Image 1 (cartoon, rainbow, N blue to C red):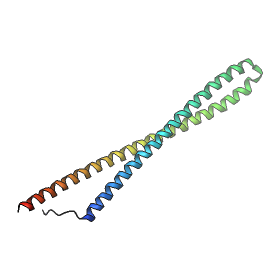
Image 2: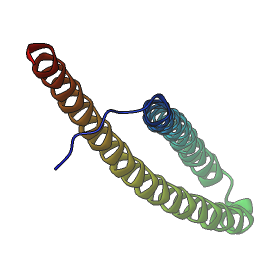
Image 3: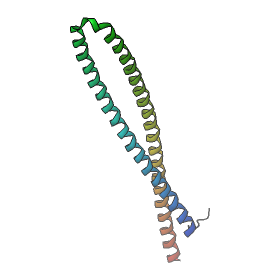
Image 4: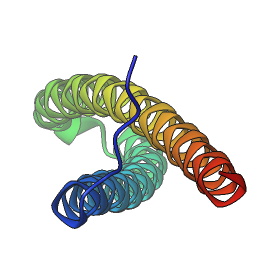
Length: 140
């Protein structure tokens, strides 16, 4: 098996590939950060929903004092509960999608890390091999 030297073009191509992989890893990290920010917004939205629920309880207590408006208030409350249930379902669906996206991104990051490690090992091997070849050529 013959050992051939890496040309500048091959080294440039390898460097570009490493740069591309690094850029992809950075983009993946940015996407993870973006998703984290979205999760934070979802949590804030859930807190707002909890505050809305507390306000609804207060409204129910006041409605208990006004019997003549109970039927109208119950109708309004039912609509709000349906909207709240729809919002919670949408939040749950969104969170599930974000979890899937995060898992996919994590797989991509792991794959990219593994590829970079393989490239590092290849570079180390090639550099050692070239060093040994240079020693052999010098001793001849």
